[in-house]
Image (cartoon, rainbow over all chains, first blue to last red; front, top):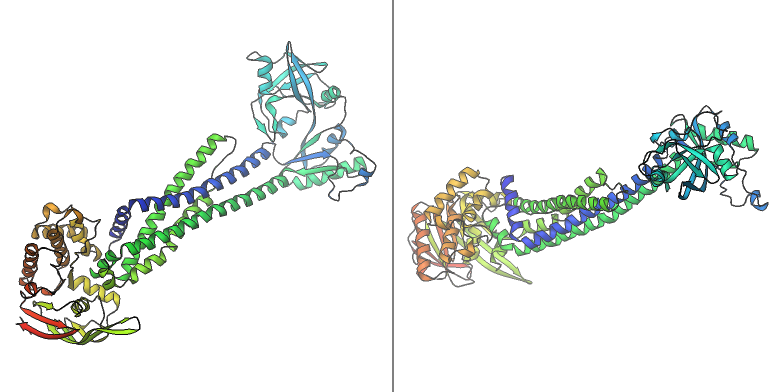
Length: 401
Length: 228
């Protein structure tokens, strides 16, 4: 029997029982679609987190005051001490390390910003010129903070894109004055629209020189120091250097340095495991679909006993009859898989429409695995029915009415 | 052409052995027209199934065209069936979802004959059996006589040497039954060996050779053989 004829005959018998075929294809496609959509979601979550982290900058280390004690009970707690604060001098000292390229000290606070009659509450970020590079921000208009003396408290500021719109509308903001708390600042630049990352919306902040921020909030401490290592290989070295330099200056280890890579890798591992787990759960539905296929094929065999008997009488050997039923199963699961991939793709797009921030996309391995598993279970579970058909005794089969 | 010697066939029913055929000796020459008659349960259908290689004898030998076919594997027997044997059944056994033309084509498809060749042969058969205008009808759209004509066309599509008909008129009225017998008998004129199993003396009596069976044994024979 020619292959084309086998396929034609099998598809003919599938068309012969339309409802059964459609239900089977539906079951199969839901299984495949479930794998595609669920892994797509998991992968989307993973990419979302990674994007959020990498938008912070590359080769980034974050230094913050205080030591995260895993032993739980440090001497500082007994004395009711608060950790020693990080100062601008500390930040500058970090540049001694040859592994460290750039640093950006960060001070944050909240203040009232006003321009003429317009005013609102705003998050104020005190930093230096290098923040732009370290934090991968880009300018919409004008200049970022001036490079040079980090200790000088110039009265200049850079506005977030949304903040600028709220205060100035379509008007030009560069060169205009705004009031922050009790000081006046000249706007020298506006950030490009960036949206939210890591829960911090740079569109709604105002950035001022770190020394100005210190005066504004009457403090000398830093919230964080962002450190950019010179290269990916230098990250570990930079971390060690930062810890050493700061403990030398403070006389004790009272800062915490985390690397973006380490955090990223942890998240990556967790979310990948989650995706796999979800894919596994979805794969169960594929196995169920496979068993369904077996069930339906068994019914098909018993419904078509006479036909099988006839085929034998007409000279079809057992192997050929087995192949015919195999072909049916392969067609069923093949069409079901393709339909499932389409369904999954649609589902993924719908989710992407609803949650635009989530980069939902099933990874190629999940798509392949879903397709392969569907086809595999379809074939595997049709072995028994096909054998049963092939082994039928033609005399008995033909006598069946 | 067909030589059966001491062929027996028994079935196990429950824990009992039931003999359907006991020591059958039968020789049928090429081009013979033989009817096998007997009451139901006499083993005539079992004999036909054995001749058509759908069943194997419990003992005895069966030679077809000089070769022992009892020793063949299932695969080889299927090949012999495909090339040498045609079946016509009482219940027609047409595939319900296939059209008349596709039913006729089925043995050719199973044998792997090229589509071009199939098309020619099917068109010829449809014409021979007056079914050309019924070619695209499915079995449930055909009359009993038309269905049996489709079945005969199908049985002859591979040009078999032996045509086995099991109560071919059993589901037909008398007039249509006669018509079908005429068609089958035309094949004998083309050197096809025709074996008809029936319990109807009017049908069986038309054959040149009439074999009578009772209780799995041949009890008598009438008529003359063409060859042996």
